[in-house]
Amino acid sequence: MTDVAERLAELRDRGLHRRLRLIEGAQGPRVTLDGREVLLLCSNNYLGLADHPRVREAAAEAALAWGAGAGASRLISGNMEPHRALERRLAAFSGYDAALLFGSGYLANTGTIAALADRGQVVFSDELNHASIIDGCRLSRAETFVYRHADLEHLAWGLREAGRGRAALIVTDGVFSMDGDVAPLPELLELARRHGARLMVDEAHATGAIGPGGRGTAAAAGLDGEVDVVVGTLGKALGSYGAYACAEPETVDFLLNRARPFVFSTAPPPPAIGAAAAALDLLEDEPALVDRLQANAAALRAGLAAEGLVGERSSTQIVPLEVGEAEPTMRLCELALEGGVFAQGIRPPTVPEGSSRLRFTVMATHTPEQLRGAARTVGEAARKLGLVGAPA
Image 1: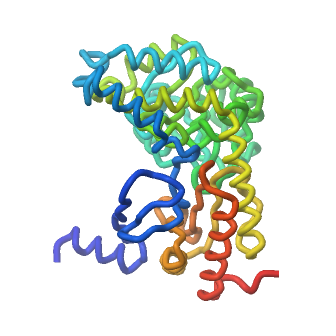
Image 2: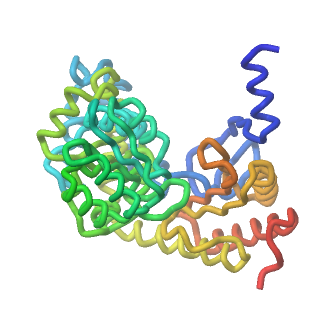
Image 3: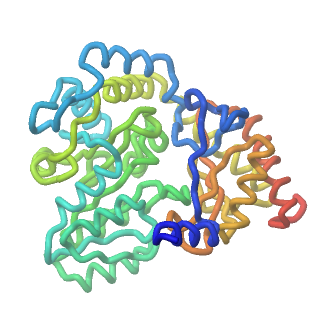
């Protein structure tokens, strides 16, 4: 048996082996999965824009006008007017004077952190931050201090220990992708200012989903344009692909020169840029989409709570149902799928050992009836597996 085969066998023994499932057709509230129709409750297409006719048409028009690909990095010959126009719009949308497009959220986070944090400095990272932030810390030449989740006292202690001048960056998710809770941004910004550090917020799961007009957790906290660096994505609520970083022009210019994933990657393809611009139009034209999303999230949380399934941690469209170990989590996932509900099981290393879960993500295009029905289906599955008692 080869080393790779042995490691695959170990993953299977631990209930951590993954496989690809096939979605037939566009992302929507209901999809055909491996040949059968199911309710989709694990997509980040929060506003339902990935399959919106205006977004599709804009992608096609951009392909016809600008081509299927950019052909080079933007510092070579891949910089096109659609890139510049979308950056201006994203900066204004987020309350900044400048923005820089990246190929993905992973590239934006790894590139931004590694560029801004240098040898001899310290990056302060919430323990539940996304893997792209963790990897950005690893790629930087700075020391990393991981503070307990949303624990301001622990962070303040770490900042004091580091000493002024060494604290380069405090970085946090705005909405935590596996738990659905929101970072305490006003307090984090105050600590950053007190200790001479920058604050960077990843708004991937907040852009288009949280705050006035879907402008994110910083806007929801009344901090439009005040956070030093905001990273957002085009691939979730905006229904396309790619990401961006917003900051003051000097910082954006520095990232343009020093963020390696930007410097050494082909520019995002024009169809993705056209689609994102159209999605941004729709969000600005129909801000009620954000309210509908959050109302649907509340409906799912209430339905799951009635089944005795969910605590109070999430306040967003991400609703986790923590089971514990990987094996019963995946049995619950498969049993719910048999009932027509697709909510993916999440296991280590995505979440810590002992905290495997189903992670529900709601769309604005779901109906409350669909969500209540899904909660009943999952409740019945959990009772069959002995994971929960009868509902009250």
